[in-house]
Image (cartoon, rainbow, N blue to C red; front, side, top):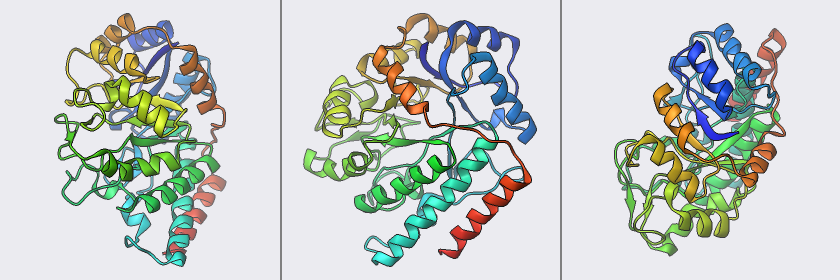
Length: 340
């Protein structure tokens, strides 16, 4: 199996994509707006991917956080709130307010997960566990639940629990923390100069949720840990911080290889994240020539990565769209609103 998750070029598999994916057997796929026309088309696409792979537990990912990061939306799918709006908390909420927020978050993500599962999507790249700082770039902003690490951890746990009830896995991100970055890693390479002591706050939610099945790395340099390499390509950060200090032993996926924080050719980037200790290289844009270069140069998936992938996919399950499912989602949304 190829240690890569690939994007697709459009709403249907091309003949060339089918042949390439059949030959290379990537670990999974990720979908974007260009792949989505309507519910019937989307479920046909995800069914086609599973049939091609011959794996019922094939991970099919999407960025469906809510708010400004939502690939599915009206008119065919529901609009979901951003994490901060959903939490609706001060930095020091009363215990009853926090309890209601926890219940609200779990209801929301169970409903969101059921909508995904009906479309054949079983993994969403959420929750964001980054702890935003006041002077940081707003690429995280309201995607974070709160600015207090302990609240981020509690609401992140509720998000994962809700998704799990729907049979969907969440991907915690962006480990070890993007909240201090002064730039957007889509556009440039952020460099965080905070001390190791200050970085403890960034790490705290990831430590609390170290039992999550999947995580996505940050394309960010942390000078206190490795002043030369961003986390995604730093063997030191992955070994000492993510796997060691944080204790994360789930499936570690790189952030998108096409982001401008990384340098070099696309195949070199894929090789670098895998060599550093990521289990999976994520390539989102669906460009077949790029995917072929990656497939030609990266090694086969390691036994450790294969084991983590199997564990991460063990509890995934799908459902079929129906009036009963829609009513269940509506009831969860109504329950969420009653907790405001």
